[in-house]
Amino acid sequence: MKVNFAPLVVPFHRRLQTAAVLQWVFSFLGLAPTCIFLFFYLLFTRFWLVSVLYAVWWYFDYDTPARGGRRAPFLCGLKLWDHMRDYFPIKLVKTADLDPRHNYVFGFHPHGVLVAGAFTNFCTYATGFRQLFPGLTSYLLMLPLWFRAPFFRDYIMCAGLIPSDKESASYPLCRKGGGNAVVIAVGGAPEALDAHPGTYNVMLAKKKGFIKMAMEHGAHLVPVFSFGENEVFDQVENPRGTWLRWMQERLQSIMGISLPLFHARGIFQYSFGLIPYRKPINTIVGRPIRVERKEKPRAEELDALHQLYMDELSSLFEEHKGNYGVDKDTHLIFV
Image: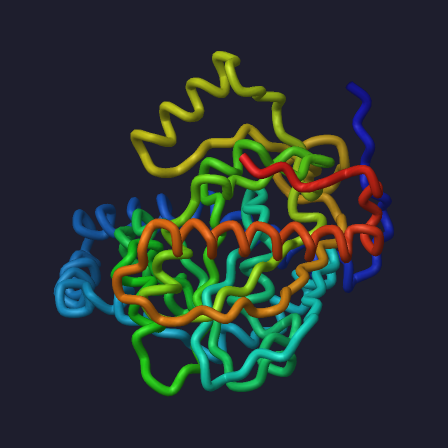
């Protein structure tokens, strides 16, 4: 395989962008196990007290992720995220005003491999979420597994991430006065296995849990589609029915996380590596779907709202696909 090396002279701002994305990829792929290793390693060194004191802190702070987390505005506003935004680049597009007197459930599609668009738009201030939607605070859901990693849990909470279990996701929606937006990558880890460039498969046909949660709390639903989310990584072909897909789905059912075999470019060459491609990501926030509160919604009410949501998401995709290079004959496929 011929290696396409990066040019020797690269503008400094592009090096900063690559460094910003590199640390983000490491945070998703390697920081959690590194933190776990560090926690136990320190116990056998003269710095053992650090791990002991952290364990005490963890005990008293255990429920914080389920209670809205602990966002650190200074971290969300770091210049680092501006460099990451400009690497792809990533853009947040508003199509309608959202009244901050209400709470919202944002359905984010597609998941992609590492949800680059969801993280940059809803966990950092780089794309202007606060200016586009004044009065709203976003909370991105993440697998509860990651909140069991010492040190790492504190880092992701600082970015506004909370666990994706029902209790944690419901907490912001229970707050009176509105102004809270829970962002759910509806397809979750299984959808990452379908994140191939040029595909528009959305795992939504049987996903009704977030619809029910919105109805129980009277939170308005907002469909969000991120064009380019599947384009930033290549993935080894894994059609349904193959041994690779069977193994990936089996591991996902056991561990709760999916293991897509993805690749893209490197730091000093563009032929292979785990750094995403420089492909634009445009995240479109759709019009809100008004939801009346029903503590115990009937099955037919749930089905009707679910169908309305799918129709609105499909309309959002059709309305904007031409602006982002999607062929007019391409449509969303609900799996």
